[in-house]
Amino acid sequence: MPGGHMSVAQLAVMLNTIPAEISFIDTENTNRYFNEGPKVFKRPGMALDWDVFSCHPPKIEPMVHTIIEAFRAGRRDRLPVWVEKDGHIMLVNHMAVRDSTGKYLGTMEFDQDSPQASIRGASAQPCRKRRIASVVAFAPPRDLISSLNALAVFR
Image (cartoon, rainbow, N blue to C red; front, side):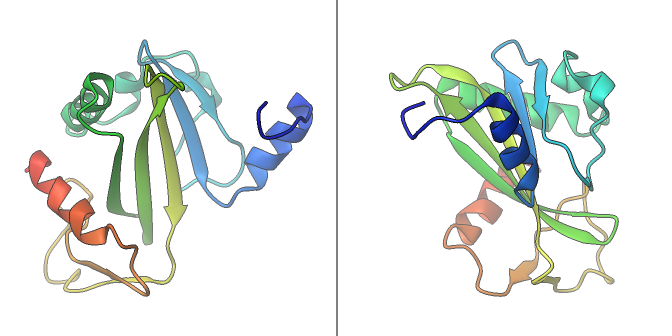
């Protein structure tokens, strides 16, 4: 690898040490990788080599199609979304994976539990499609506003 070298075992342990849920979907929309460890979003090993759309609830499937097609077409490279799941506020980062020429190789999802985040008005307003439009995070990322604006695409 350009940044160094390590064994597959070392790479696997390193990826499993990162405090996040990592998945990779290839150009054929097939689940190819999930890191191991505790998960908020269930990713059973049997879902590997399955179509990514079969692993999402029917209400979410059109959003997954839209995200992946935007990556494939080069209209987007990243889409961060705040989601509430089982009492956890998650920052779900969808990212296009491209080679050095810009060719689309797949999609990576990188989900981080954000215990420092809080929800404004969550009890008064249920989450639509399990996403949060009114998240106020402690030291929010610079692209939080653009992330929330991007959610308008899915309304």
